[in-house]
Length: 475
Length: 151
Image: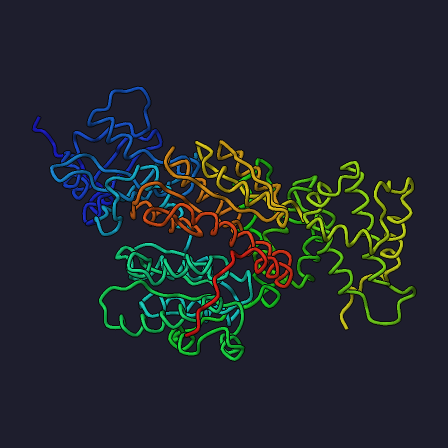
């Protein structure tokens, strides 16, 4: 009987047409199929590669097949049913080792995992400068970190934020300076990173904290010949609060932007401002020319209190982040907790939301965060906010209340440190001179023991309980 | 407010020795810790108030830069300074990209780490406590500058 040519299924013919190297693993992770682009990349005929078990092996002497098997082995999350991506070093060829970005897509049937489709992208030296000498694990870590900054993370149902997404797409297509304005914690740096990740300028993203770094360091990294602005590998330099830069540095940046305007490659300057730049200019903190030079495009981010419809998405994403650091799984929030989150004004925006969720998860006793798990200041602020105006049945002497609380805390700290004021100050995270002044003002004598009854704590609780019930209906 | 702290992640203790006097200044209330493992470092940050992390490169790049990435993701308010002994722009770029507040390598003088950490501590307090109190401390703690000479 004459040999018959192996049957080629339509899907194989389809994948053969792809210019990207593609491979298919079965549920046992054995190579089922590779296309011509894959054969060309690896110089291995499909017939030889078929059946290879692709997995990480320990203890085996590395040979060509073991190396290939490790290279094509899907990461754990893909075996669990998710998509995944890795960055690995390709096999040794005449020209050396190139870097491969491999995307894995898991396929399922009713029985579970059916197979895994893999697609390879070979990176050039420009894509990953220095990639040939950094450890593969570091390259993979770096690539994974950068993949977080996807435009989908900015999606919102609010028209104002859909506009932001349009602006981000527009900004991604250019290298012009950019200004992002929003209250602290609204995600200005995140937006800058998304623009960088999806933009045409490859390279490094560096954040310069203009308020946090000392002037000598700022001068070095911005204006010196070996600074960030002169580095060929630099893609984006993000200036956090440029109004805090010394004026001479602001003037330098104006000149630099002007002198390098026609240069083929220069790092992109993106600035994040928590207040309106016009106000900073008026107050003399921001040089007007710099404000103008940075704002050919300005993106305004809404505070969290104006985008509460997005709160469920944010909570879900932040809980996922939180789960990376704890074995506890928080499934969500109770209705009472949601009500509180929606009623809170979020002066710290997304940063504060994350801190609140972290704190609440620590205190939660069940898999759902309840209202009682939320930090007391959030609950109290909401309670006060929801209190209808009107003469209270009992006055709320705030200063007296704060003085009682402060006195109690000082007495507890002194008791804990056996009267040692230096250690008590350290415990309270304040200066010793300040502790002494407050002890004097509040009449706390050295060696005072806290009262044996809880009179003061009870009095505080009584005042809080006498607040009128929260207003629940619509006006 | 929970206690503010500086975490130093290094092998030989040299940075800790250099920075300890800064943390022990009476005007500050920052403690210093020297975790030896990534997990220990992340756990310390969980219980911390304002915090600052200083990572010395050289022992295990994947571990050290992995810590930088992890802290930047889980604790975005924690500023991390990366210090290296060798001028290596490729490695410095990776550190910047992973979210370092500053990458200090030659030819920048190592002594600059003290000024850096001092400034970042003040900025962290300013974010938590409020600008007036912390900026007053910053002014108090800045090194004395020579007065400009007028012709």
